[in-house]
Length: 218
Image 1 (cartoon, rainbow, N blue to C red):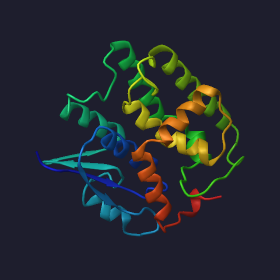
Image 2 (cartoon, helix red, strand yellow; image 1 turned 135 degrees about the vertical axis):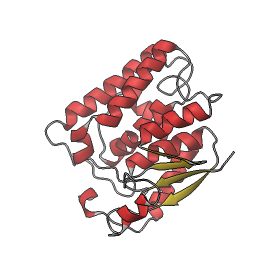
Image 3 (cartoon, rainbow, N blue to C red; image 1 turned 180 degrees about the vertical axis):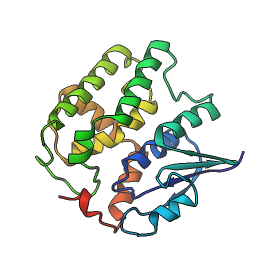
């Protein structure tokens, strides 16, 4: 099978890139990585367009197929490697996992805008603009519901690691960076995701990056 290649942005800032990257790592897929720093390089959009007409990361290259958008990439991988449990086996659990992944993919704009992902720096108490706490409360509710209904088989949202966990991984990093107050269920989940070897690999690489994107810094 042709080698997989994932085109990503800065690891310190690109939450969209983290999602498929983490999922691929967790499911043991070997892949090449092309990192294109965002914003600082005036040609970054042109460089990305070498791989995808969208001009955005992440982008997955496989055989002659190009897939962009983090959710589309994960769904493509789930179809391409069906023996791996990308989604929960139970139909009801799978429906919830897909629903919350899609909600994370398209929603929580207040949280995104006011608490941008930043692996290198901590901003305790920053970013709590109107609407942000509502987003935080909704995410905590999602985590509690998933764990309560379908988490009995393990410690992730649906027991075993799934695409849903990959989609909430950037939120974990945001909650740490901004010292968000959490309940016990959420604290345990945040600690679990942070302890993943792949997450530590990503964070360490992010801390070694030198690019600074001012709009993502306080």
